[in-house]
Image 1 (cartoon, rainbow, N blue to C red):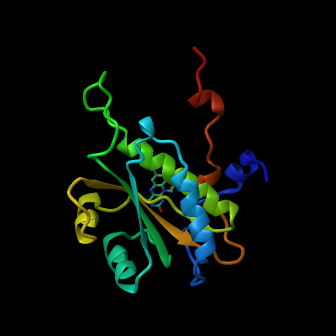
Image 2: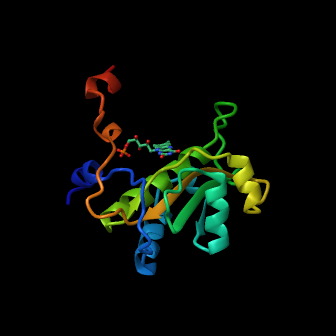
Length: 171
Ligand SMILES: Cc1cc2nc3c(=O)[nH]c(=O)nc-3n(C[C@H](O)[C@H](O)[C@H](O)COP(=O)(O)O)c2cc1C
């Protein structure tokens, strides 16, 4: 599959079976995240793999969007390590770095037949505290991972792509 075919094929999985993600696949997914570009190559991203019974229970209590996944990646960054733009007050790279890493993870997972869903719907600070993260670490998103049931389809929103002219302008 070409990259464009892969990107078009992927959709958010919002129901997972009990089939665990194989360790070799998880390692490969994490490797794809590890080689993602980051500002000034500072690699401020932090990825926590939640798989323990206790961790999965806790994350389900804090987000309604885990969808039965048995593996959840909690993705964020260390604000002490992010790049800070010296030319523009307040512009820091942590959110962008974590998002690029997450995109690599999501697409590599799909390439291996593993579904995921990018999840922002959770209380970020409460989640960080509940998992005992250091003060300097921010949680940006959750990425439940796993296998969709046979015949799973994307939600209609998946197909609601704006015409490219609406979002791309040539100057
Ligand atoms: C930044 C971001 C935040 C999202 N947050 C959530 C979320 O909290 N819960 C959820 O079920 N889906 C979430 N999604 C999934 C989107 O709803 C989904 O990507 C979008 O509707 C397009 O569908 P598709 O991924 O199937 O192409 C999020 C996606 C992105 C990119």
